[in-house]
Figure 1 (spheres, helix red, strand yellow):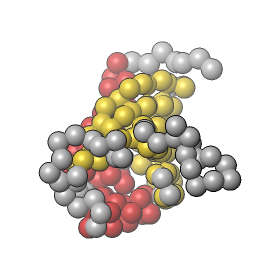
Figure 2 (cartoon, rainbow, N blue to C red; figure 1 turned 120 degrees about the horizontal axis):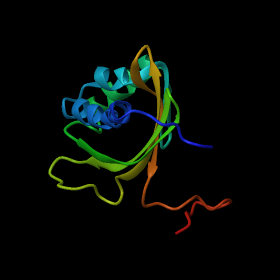
Figure 3 (spheres, one colour; figure 1 turned 120 degrees about the vertical axis):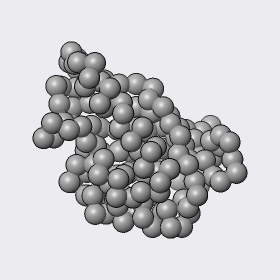
Figure 4 (cartoon, helix red, strand yellow; figure 1 turned 60 degrees about the horizontal axis):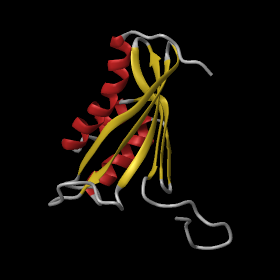
Length: 147
């Protein structure tokens, strides 16, 4: 598959999705995070599958009211590829920082895929998925992970 030539403005608009998520997280703003997604967008986190803005917003509202209260998220793009004029794949690294921590712990480090599409002139997430960066794959037939 080849990439498509795109403008610096489109590259920046897709890359800024990460910054918009970071800013919404600072304010624990579930609605702003959900607004990053298309109406039927998909959120996949370890053990979590949410489809559509209402489910995504409800997930983050509950998370900010509970285990993610007072946390921060950090991240940076590590790759960006356009698969068409209106479709992009952004890769990032980062994680959640607990209150009192100054950097992402190994347990919280993630790698993420952001599948962005241009809809009505705006870049939105059709899908976001992340996975732990420091854990191995499950070993079939056991409760262990590979190194």
